[in-house]
Image (cartoon, each protein chain N blue to C red):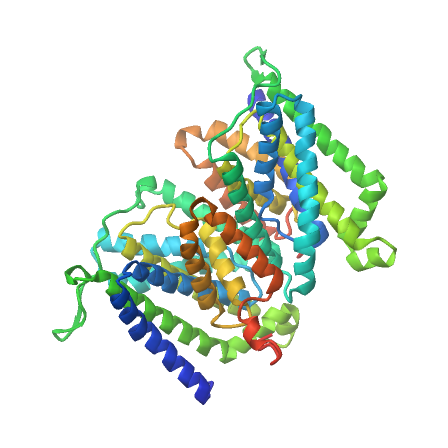
Length: 289
Length: 328
């Protein structure tokens, strides 16, 4: 039981971080970022290059992941999403762009890093063994701790900094924010960069445990979509709740249903559909977000 | 009943001649028989994409067509291999079964809108893939293989459709069948869009509350439209399974669902024939770039992004620009 709880917290913390970035981008620009999983993989590969290949300290590699993805996110927003949103007659057109970007990132990752599974040396060795009730490697605990720390940092940033306030205003009402003197274009770019940065950060954190490979992008995007749907699209607390709920469902499902084979995800999907039929806007979302 | 103008009749005639006479003649002359498979795929994928387009027409982003294509493929394959039913009978049954499933699922989820609907349909593709892996009747990851080719249909001893296995060139037969299905589908779509139902759909696309307040039964229409859409997906999937003679849980995946949506976007959402053009361009573009080897995906996705950047309203928006956009 304790083991399931510990696994749930560990999975939930990392999932919540992925969902945060996605929901931030959605809240600001109404863009469903299909390329989010690919951004996560890219972040993992950057950390792998700096930490695993070049032997730089892990923290530096993690920072490199964040910076790379933030710059990439800002450029994508400025030169791709903003013009398409301006020109297109339907806002769904950005979905095609996002899907194209997902393919594009896949192609780049394939060309630059290849299709092999890549791993890095452990950051800390050893396993916590609490009376055989909880068994968890120290590096997982460290990553979980770092993930929770980043989530708290993100919330504090959104609540108390000037940028965070501007972003929240933008998410609430774009026109009103503009009328109050918020530079909408600049803050959309910053928001997109932060969303991409979060994906890169979690990719960099997780590469130390799960490793990274080309095929992880798509499934990660789908999981992130599910978390966002559980919590409600465009709501930060919802994304965190969704991440933790999905993490626990997965941990419990894998522990209880393991003898039935690969049925956990089927059950999660089906219960999600039933849940959404009853409460279409998710736990905390605005109706019709 | 919409009346076609002289130009439209000519266009239709040219199109039919091109599809049924010129293309086979060209392929026979050039010996590029691999084009049959490509074009057959285009025809079938455009049928499924037409379904997605129809859900776009009521203002829903549908990324779940892969699910219904997979359902259709499995239903047809199971009926043909286990129950021994003729393929030609299993084809409409596959479509009807997909439509039935879509009604059951659609009643609750069609209440969702915007990205919520998009995301839940995306999840739906995953659900069907996992169900196919888990159920015993679908044979799990091994899939259903060596499905027999479509058999003969005869009316009063007169052969209407010959046995595909006995033909010397089944690929040509599949090409004709798929193109015929495609023409039928798009004729039906054109008729539907210009009918009363089409007008009601357009009113829903613009504002569901308003449509509802002036007496449009929106709950009924969206389920009907979703059912038609899934029917087309099921037909396309079943035909695909028959050509490949095998169905696996991975036959239609999330990527395929996304591609169906992209086909519609690329062709243009305001135009009935958008999905056909979008499928042709995307599928052929992908095939033509094959010679680039490892750079194929890079160039393909790069082109997709550039296209979106300069023509965010689809390819057909080029033609109608300045004349006032129809259907919006």
